[in-house]
Image (cartoon, rainbow, N blue to C red; front, side, top):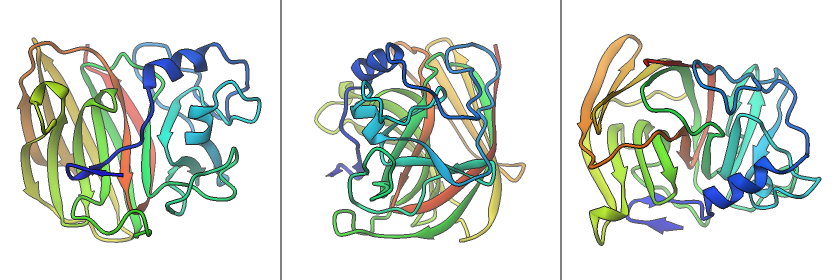
Length: 259
């Protein structure tokens, strides 16, 4: 689905998260068991290429077939492990089954932390674009690529940072129903393309200053973009990945809290 220059996976996060918390189906091996704890967070991934969780589990959380993670929710698409890190899988535009063996749905990947207490923190990780793609339902768009949610409340209310886009832009964007008829607002941007097949070391520093959120992005040790998001109120939230029409990986993912 296309809407205001962004693709969204449709679901109600709060209701599904409550359902997830009451289910007894096992978590994936290698999970960090830190989904609900405060402090630093370093979710583990298996070396093998295997499903971590997917949108089928998100929408069918009570099923014994659901592949659930103690660390991650996938509201759209499928999240896999690969070589000890995370992977989008090969993107396609179809809906995955319980094991994502028929399809990944990862042309529109949305995966966020089970934890929802992130407010003042620093993310460090490495990312790599393996290939851009298209599908019949997701044609090429300038904003295709890898993005990071810095404060995710639900699919209608979040802040995000574009790390590697098809058009080479780095963008800080906010989505908030309070913005009116067009809830998406581009707050700041610059240009810094990514090369296919190259690993980049990225740091995302998120500082809270009252009700404001200061986002500073570094790539390979160099500051790329910094912006202060002014809010009437600032609530802790989830963090995670959004990708569109891209096969990508991330590894050595770690979060330190600044509190």
